[in-house]
Length: 159
Image (cartoon, rainbow, N blue to C red; front, side):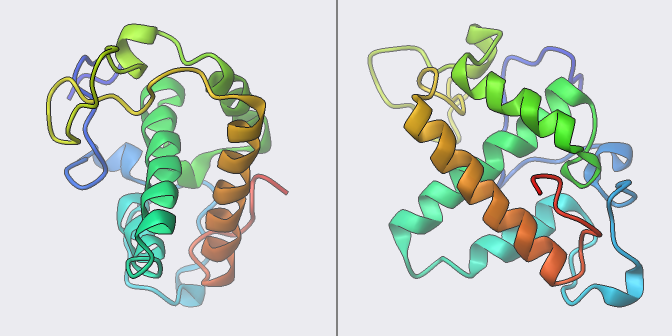
């Protein structure tokens, strides 16, 4: 998959990345002996985290959306897995939320909501307001904190 500029961004359910971008060897991965989940890569770790919210559809949907946006941005824009992101990367991501570029790659075409598996689906419908940016970062902090707590990551890059 060419990641420099792809026109069809895949939802997390079908996202597959080369091993160097999967997070199997992310620079912020914790020691193998500490990990309390079976996940071998970032997508599986995120799916395990999301499974905790499956019975609360609004939380699940919001959490999946924010984790998915970060995952895709990390792979496509930073060329690194989530488990290698730094605090500086996440500062850049927060600025990206205010103005996702390139628009044709990240923003859905106006006029209708595209199904998640449609080639026209995009992670954003527009730039996020300041309130939505804060909510996104709060959700991602929850994700990173949990990944540290269960031993998948060595540290939370948002702290």
